[in-house]
Length: 164
Length: 417
Image (cartoon, each protein chain N blue to C red):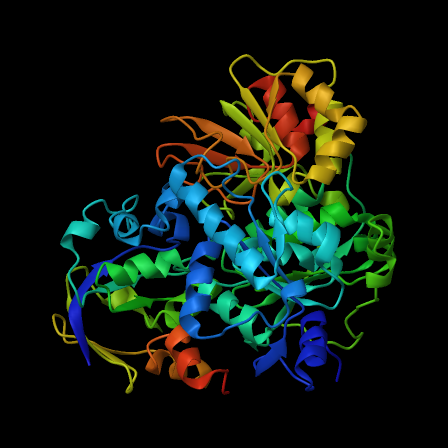
């Protein structure tokens, strides 16, 4: 069970919004890189977000480049799940590979700052502030197993290969 | 029941007769990394416990994004990659050789291949009928070690192309038109396949442009069948034996078919700050542009420099508009030098960069000032893409770029031809 606050974002948040190319020189200095997460959309985000919080976004979250640094700096900021109406393909897979769940649901009913409780195995989000209950779509088995192990690298370390 | 191109290639490489929606494990024919995502892939590879590359001769490392290195931190990232390539026995492509996707197209990708790499524009090789897709560093690290990866077999959208381009209109206008039509998430998780009689009018270089931007509609792959044009291209690259025809079955099932008449297309531009925010170039007359950039894996090939040079020949860039040109590869640069295109562009006022990604992703070589606008032949115009969230990026064809460099404002290239 995860519990935290919602940080609302709109539609079409690209990987360039999440971690701009102008910070490419910091990609091997992740602590420094993570200080810039989402700054072009919300400069205050990095100082306000706390361990356990959630990003709640509109459609096509994470479109653009394949940079795994995008979900990585979001995770490093303390975010424990991303809720979105839809997510771009590479970002979605990258986040799961880092053990960061991306849950597809109707995020319109969640307001910025709402307190959320997420039951990953039941597939339910409870908005404790509004009292609303949401369900999110299932992901393929292989992704659930990767998520269970905390990401692709720990999964491969343990199993040595993909098991469908 | 017939198969789409995506189903056909994934069936062959997974050893099963598969359908859209299935999850499969497929062997990969080529894996590559580049200098902005490669260092993390190397770290993940070491962390994974996978000791060796499955096929070193089919694993490549490209230094192309930050070249020559603008900072010591990126120079250190390059050191990581050089050391990895040397220790693991991978193919090493040094800075100055060109953009990974162009080099993969010229030398490595084959029709029917499965290619994965830690760069979203890996889809470019779909122009010659390879199932080529971008993944993150972790996925690519594992693919390097195992020689295979898992896929969800995508549903396919068919763009059925007919007619021929008008003068001044090219593949860039076609793909911008398609993205405008279906939206930036119109093909998410799907294959965007191009077919119909009209593809005979689209050269290999132009097919790479189209496939390259399939990802801007969210697609997993952008695919062309491998036909005579593909065969001739590979033969011209000295790779005759790499050719095999690849085509979808006549009764393949598509989720959606989009008919497109090439003859009805006009020069098209994507406005800030999304790629699907398209308009016709002629509708944007009067929009002042401070920088024009011609290059990248989208439009940095010989025919792109040729059309730009033909428009700029004997003329000068507008005094208020800087012009940057970056050929996509050493081969492109050398041929453009031989043919005089570089001379023409430099005489017209262009600053020519070494082969590489140039200012496309905003890390160096042409970042924009506050309030400035760039007309770029690249593939993305998200806010902040070219190094400054207070700037504006418009995307267009090399012809539109050249006409715009002359006029200092967005210009329909047909006015300048």
